[in-house]
Image 1 (tube, rainbow, N blue to C red):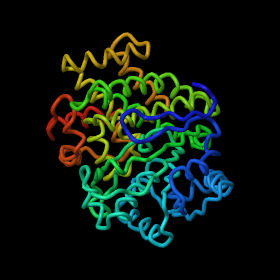
Image 2 (tube, rainbow, N blue to C red):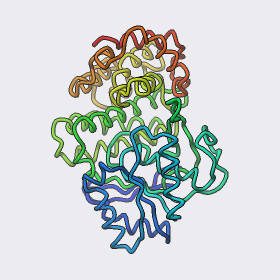
Image 3 (cartoon, one colour):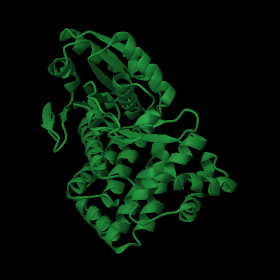
Image 4 (cartoon, one colour):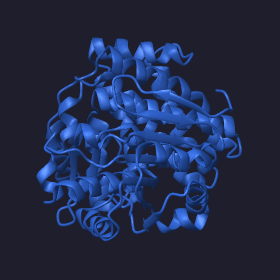
Length: 384
């Protein structure tokens, strides 16, 4: 990957990607291309402490852009968090939103955009295109490399009462631009880099075999995997490798583009109840469930052929070698332990499986799943 700043149009969606070390410095001029008024930066206090917020506002100040900040974004953003962000937007009346942080900050900004422009609650926008009016432009500045939210038209927001994740999408919710500056990922703790990187890996693999895959989405899935498999290991071994970080960050965006054009599968359906009920970080949960799901799906001839193609794309012999490579990455960061070591008791597996069966991503798994099959997959992952 070139180390220079690049601007690339994203195929078939109204967005662009700005990428390269130091490209955050161009944020102010980028904002001026899309809006004349003030902006609201949606972020969290960790991003402020890391210095990324100051770098962003310095660029805005140089460009003469007025800004306000909402710094209370939380991991797995809730309906309550989005409501607080919307109140901040109503106070400053911005003409553009900036999501600065991980996928949670970006999704909070998207959720705010729904409510700020349309009113109501996030429950009103579950599904796609329930928003009938234009939204304000949103620029996404990810500081992690995993969710792909920076190139997706969906916001994942949890109901604060039930913990259920709601997917709320609209074409106008798509960020107009994503600023991928790998220097922003250098301050990530290794565990966070691992969680986000493994999540991106799961996105690439699940989107490649789901029932809604198509030629365009598969190209992005395959391209994502070619960047993630060799370079994620390098990031985890040497956090200062800026080339590897840039490659993983772009790979995560490609995986996000693949999801935007297709969907996910059973590994994500199994992961969500583990996060909701036990607070297990999403990247850990989805990573731990991915190998058993891949082996389960590989019993289908067509899916096994796709896994074989993905394996060859990253220099591996076949699908079993691909599963083994995933397991090696999980072991490298300690995500290969059993669910029992993360506080999950055996007697709750049936209930977890029932919850997983109600997750929307599971409906797109290449091999149909129900609560009984999902329970089997949980039990395979119960002990390391």
